[in-house]
Length: 86
Image (cartoon, rainbow, N blue to C red; front, side):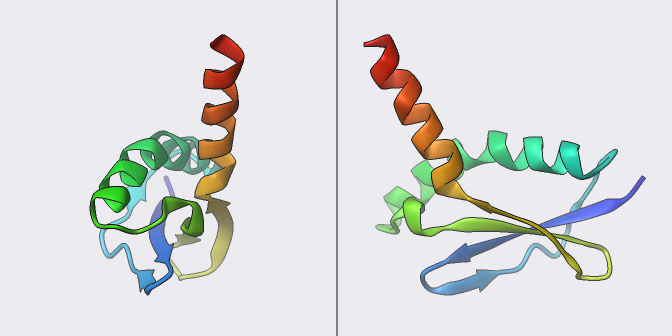
């Protein structure tokens, strides 16, 4: 199975994932990142960092960029769901 690295881009720069995860494919990497964003957003807010300015840069073992996932993609979707259910 391939390895994926989830680098965190913030207004302060790039926090490189040096460990990575072995996952079945890019779709699994995308879903894993989507699940992590709400928790990461809470942690960033505690550090006074706006999570809406952040994204995951998912790369393969060779460092090739495969996918960029802006936190807003998940945060906006979740906010829309909350408003719709209110």
